[in-house]
Length: 173
Image (cartoon, rainbow, N blue to C red; front, side, top):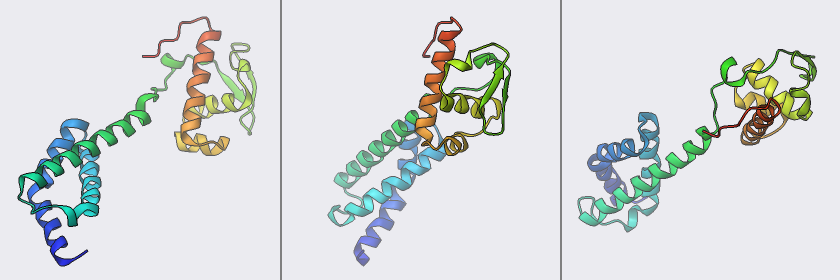
């Protein structure tokens, strides 16, 4: 990066850091994610710094606003995908039976008969690790040799099957 580009970046930061944060916060409603958006937007701006006009120009200002908006929306979509299928795990929402497992996590018996017996071994293990052992998704995924996303998705599918087997209606909301 040339000296003039470094000075331009410094000037951009002085002028636009706080307005960028406010725009990001308006989209994300989360201060940590808004800070991440500003940082990510500045990384994007660094790649285009030599093509930008003077930091004070209306054209540069419009470009900075466009970058922070698109960055914030991208982060919003990523976080929405991450948290969309996150369910609070407690006895009331899951109403799972008492589960007796061996050290490997295989279900030996459950008090409700075959509610979990209708699931394959991996799905049973995911449900047990998440609900009974209350492990975080990363640990659940590691123990069943899946990605975190795949473990979450399989948990959601298993949850739907359990609800169907119990004769209840599944509500996606």
